[in-house]
Length: 253
Image (cartoon, rainbow, N blue to C red; front, side, top):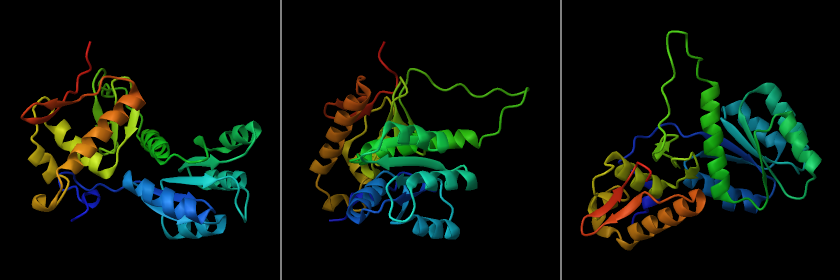
């Protein structure tokens, strides 16, 4: 059976945000953070030491860095200062037992976000996607006097960051995995119109005849639960009895 997590033909393939993960715990880095963040649409490179991170940065540019404070060869706070002096990339810090003063110092030295261990990959992915949106805003030229920025849609659900995030009417960001992104792209592109199960399955696999339909049910179930738990808002993904599923973009009044 082909793995639908690697197949999403209904979406174009924009460049994924490049993220370096600096974590000296090899099990956490290689078994949890790196593969987990890849599932949420990031191009991930792992590093175990500050020196290894710097070598990676000489070979390729990164958009964001996730790093631990406690490192074997250089203090994480020193790494933050060094990175901020060199670039304006996004910096998310992970830490275990550190003081409140450390957190304040890290943010003061240039970190964009600070998360506590144990790292929840879904929370980390949402943080990185949110940070990616802010970074894109930094790089956008200011509007001239003769132009005005397009108003952001209010009161509706929408996909953002190349479809890797679902944004609720109140602005809550829900990070999506590869299969969740594929399903939502199809549903949102046909918002207000029921989409049959066959069409959704075709977006998840190259071989619809070698695909367990219950896996689609699992994706839908997880999506509904995640949207409800993270946003606290009415879930826009509804079942159209006998016709498949329906995505409702407008929030109920």
